[in-house]
Image (cartoon, rainbow, N blue to C red; front, side):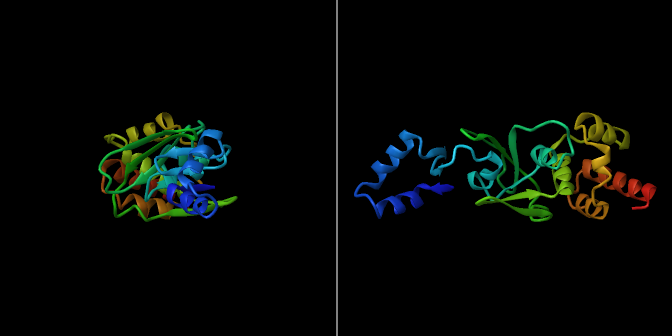
Length: 200
């Protein structure tokens, strides 16, 4: 379970006269694994994505990691990518549990379409598939037209077309309308057209 230095010192202080010394011994013995300053985990087998929200926040998993999580792209993603807001610059952390990256999305869209999931003793927040796609396109340089957008989606990002067509297009249209960037305006038009073509 993930714990802060304050939590551990409080727990150890009820059992030992020198809780800080006992904390250091637990780290040296491997009973506690430092993640980032002030944060520890006692289970070395915990998947990194379960820790992402505790390392830096507020944040939720999104971008490439979430697209891979939902099977929308074929590649495994080894960096746990998360969205934040008003942080102004990208943050990266290298930890014993993997690499973690955090980047901003617009504050107005941040709270939309976030799912809370439960796994074992852990809870984590992750974007819906529609939100992860919008966040990913927001983070990329703008393309010029529909042809370039489709190349970006299905060749560069390697979005699975079958998985794309399973998205909730009402959600995708309303979400993409909130970002006010070229890529998302193009996605909005593409989603509307594909929705009409397939009578979704």
